[in-house]
Length: 101
Image (tube, rainbow, N blue to C red; front, side, top):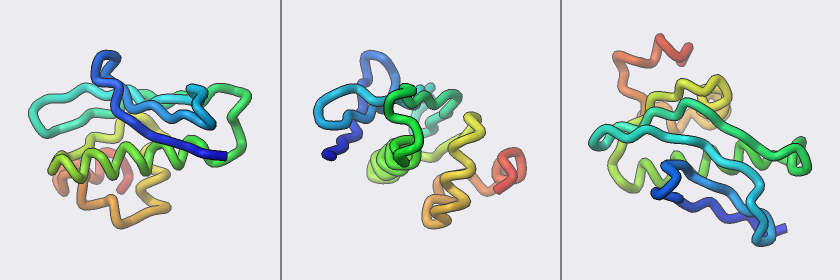
């Protein structure tokens, strides 16, 4: 199984493909270097395989590479950040309590 995460800027979302098939996405709203992540979706046929976590980690890696910050409004994103605390620095310190981080 080959997964790839990429930014589909035309749709304002990071997408994950599995063996070339779209498996899910996380929407974003960008304001300068700040990325609000309001919604994550993994298609049912890809559920239970860790695709959602792989997607979020890939999106966070890309945002970090761009020097951005994250507002993780989608409840799944803070869970991934708690599982991968190296991404906590992407959430502005003043906002962390809002997301239980």
